[in-house]
Image (cartoon, one colour):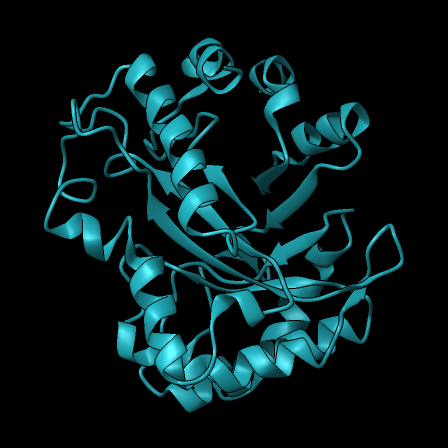
Length: 276
């Protein structure tokens, strides 16, 4: 719905939409044109699915033909899969490079990865350095100031939650290190191989950032006040520890028939806490 987004309009630096929620981003962009809009279509060739089939991993063009129609809605970046992994990482790299190369030649910028919380394994990230270096050499467009724009990275994670009321596996030890603070482990590993996120020219967005398991009625049952305080703490921690993270998208605002959590009712608390 538009109302909660408009109520929080001054807080936005970026917004992510999926199929059928594009109008919300268009309204927000009329209020704040500088807001960065990320979009992911839920459909591949008319079918709702999260990523390539086994055959499509080996034939990127067959996948591209089914998704490129969704790249022309006015968003700044597009995600093109969701929480997909392929055990053959050279194939994963070749596939992502092919999709980004095709899009970039047409002035379309993408976010690659879209990894689920805790994924991929830490030891995979050094294998992805060649892909990150390739992105650095292949701009996909221009920013409003004329500087080159590059494809970005996306992953999903969980909020930093104040210890006073933190509850749930992902936001408390020991898993907190492997989910919430995972980006620190990854960057330290990359540095061992002569690279780091600070050297990556594209943006890095946490395109799904939650506080619990993501479903309505989760056992953690955070109040809106606790949720808003956690968002504020996350902004502070990312600013302090991870300047390479460009922005994040809260999971989730908006209802659906699937049963995902809907944080629309927390708009007032978010304005109050983040505006401090």
